[in-house]
Length: 341
Image (cartoon, rainbow, N blue to C red; front, side, top):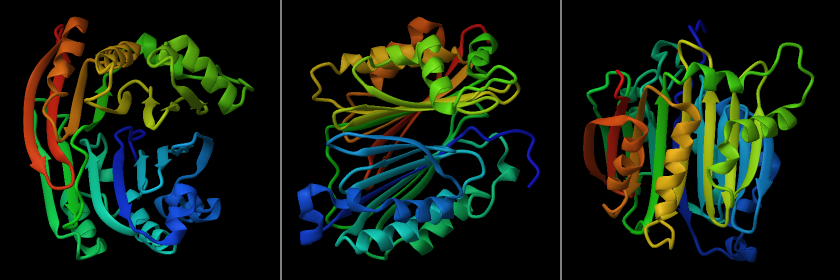
């Protein structure tokens, strides 16, 4: 399939499961009991592979050839870029979860606006096709459904959201997810994500060096980092801290440069102001000319902090849209551009 460049904008799928089968209760591992062969089968359907992994007592985090996978006992998050077919993971995941006595109780799918939409394969050829595929694939008991495209004044950034849940699923009203999409990265900073021609370092070693020289390791010093550098360019990392993850992915090529930053947290965290610092540090690593931030939370306490974090960096909020979704809560979508523009 012809492409003008690599598609940096990711597709993100979050599936939550529930069940009281004894298998699920085995050390409370749930979905973490899935064997690596089962995960490989899922990823083969998506058309990506595992390149690195790390785990703690709460969840497993995988760096993929195209972004990231996080496996919790009753929740799976897959985020993939390029021309991956992310939604094709749903059927095999439902099947494998069923074998563990778990049933799907909610689904959330989000993405930005593709840079190269005509290069996307089925079912990602359009948001309409994605919604049709989701409607046909998800169990009928996930009957509370909503699809929406949240616009902005920036033509290159809009936010696509689909959620579905059953009658029993209640979302924690304190948790938030922050999804940041950055384009037109500072060229000098983007060059740090290229490997030298003829370099012989492994992806793991080169990734650790990029984490250090770019300042990514300082975003959350408490996190255990699993990182990987691609040849000749590109970078991915997962940060693991207790039951929280963060993740960064970089496509540094000039003309279609892109970076993403995602993190989760709780409004009851003692150091919720740490969110402001982390977001500010992440954006400073790339100094994008344009970026968008999607804040998903049942509470409205988080999204006002976004502008507080970014405006001191010379970024101006150009638009703000909000909507309510079953199984997700409030989604607030903000876009920012550098004041020099």
